[in-house]
Length: 389
Image (cartoon, rainbow, N blue to C red; front, side):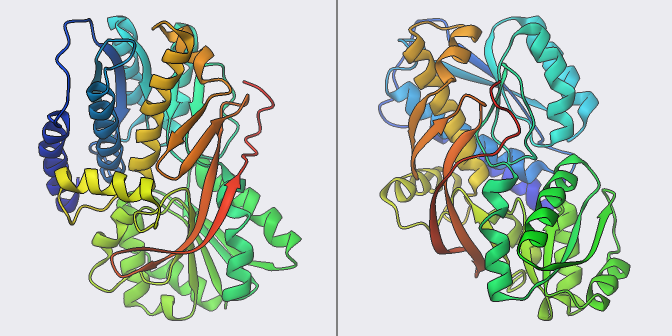
């Protein structure tokens, strides 16, 4: 865990207690409605786990302050998957054996999700997955609350052609999400009559990116489509900045979160472009309220990313689904989520029959310590690869 992540995790622990003690929180005598949460709080992707917890804790506090779910309080039980598929399965099995949760929320990586799903399918226990991913996760017991490739790429890549140029270099981590994202990106790039100057994948944990930075520079690409998550992304962008690469290429950063900017260093990582379902700078009443609540508890300097937003949405949707069904169990959660439309800080969100959400999307760029929204793209429906789950 990085020192930045460790400090933020301590802050989130303190903020969780503060959020749970929000004025108006009701005292309950009823049995809690429990959700297991499997997220990375160590292992390199802890920044995302911290953001997930921020959003979930706020949702739980709001739900309990408003009477809980059908008169019962919500309780979240956390497990650290250590950014490791084997550990994720072990934590999932422990929740299944305990037999007292309605559903699971998490994880971050596709590899962990894929490792967990056979166990969850057998147990008939729904997973609420709030991370952007590659699509194709088709199961009755999987519900996704973040983006699939078309929602992130269809507007971003044409914007990059218009603003930077028609030659693209694709660089990502060597696992399923970047691989599938790049398959979709290459198809779109070809359709725009643009070229792919190069494509490569990197293992996790690389400390010296100078060789790949030189290859990207030598390719004369104008746009770098970047899909490396976590601490490795911070290492790459720092080195790319120091070696001058970002003076000649514009970065289209897939899966970007505002949490990265504090790790790049003062003034670094500027003018990188993203399409996201949320930005803390959005001038929308719901977003302002959401961000203000989190910063009152987590601190005014705490970055608030779309990972906090989508995890918040997942628990808010779970409550709406169980109220819709009129009872509290796993199958009631599944039935209630299918076709559900619920309110979010950025406006209505609809869960389709493919178990993937239609989201309002935004084109934005990094500026200062956050994202500046350049264009509201409106609702973009997913192409998840599933006709129905």
